[in-house]
Length: 359
Ligand code: SF4
Image 1 (cartoon, protein in one colour):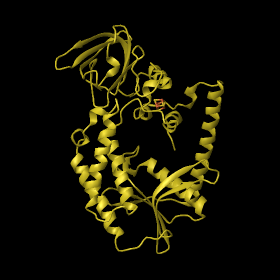
Image 2 (cartoon, rainbow, N blue to C red; image 1 turned 120 degrees about the vertical axis):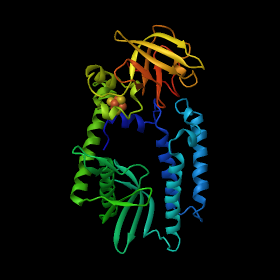
Image 3 (cartoon, rainbow, N blue to C red; image 1 turned 90 degrees about the vertical axis):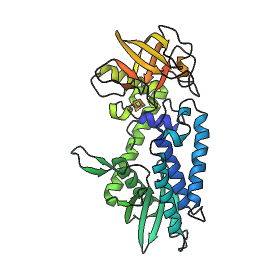
Image 4 (cartoon, rainbow, N blue to C red; image 1 turned 180 degrees about the horizontal axis):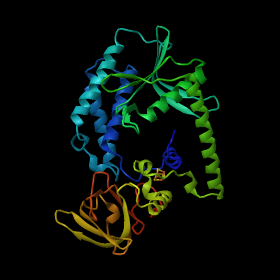
């Protein structure tokens, strides 16, 4: 279930993100694609997995090279920490799937891949990687390229909550569509290890009902916003741990309102203030200082305008926002990180479409 409806609405509406995602997330997409193709039986030889992985990376390098947000991640094999370890793990996982596909014939009835699931009322949709019937046991599997476990509040290791919710919903949608509950829900890690998710049909059905109610509530809120009887912020759920991973922060008034009203919380390292100076620092780098509510904040050794087009031709006094900075603890000094982006209401540059920036 989504944590912030506004973020989900923006993403579903194909609004281009305003902040880069980590190159590891791109590798996750590549891994998923390769494993999907392996599961679909698109390879005749396990050795093809390496070539296909490399061609997917080349496609993504080209795609990233055309974006202002992520072109500095090209080539992925040099900017991604542990790229070669990841490549080895993913291609090994693909080869295992390809090898296991030989020797037994998959029929439509026994084995379905990338199966679309929908609720009868058409409001909920999902796509499960793999549905298999073995010895009368119905198994729903989903491949994951990231970590399957997280610490809960007591510090003990649990299956990631979002994966549990996702698989429970798949089970409910499958039962709704095919009138049969699965016997097992399984997450498959890159090393092939399978983690079984416990479930009961009752809890999955309950979750499906709750999800539909949430969806109805959000749709009603959207209608109110569109009719002008409510502010867009009623759709937002601004919390540090949620907003931290959101790529729409630069344009989200709810985010700025919350963080300005609760400065003690562990918000992302974003700053917004009036430009005092932007000076050359050698090798094409620049130093930037901002007046943030009367406090002077410095960002040292910023990259050039190709990396930060919003800072091109910017004038003293302009309102400037910086996102995903690295903070020197206990100081007012910041530095650029790989996900850092700058925006300004006072320059014309915006990525890919027209946005209004918050502050
Ligand atoms: S910045 Fe926070 S409140 Fe705004 S859309 Fe993103 S997650 Fe939601």
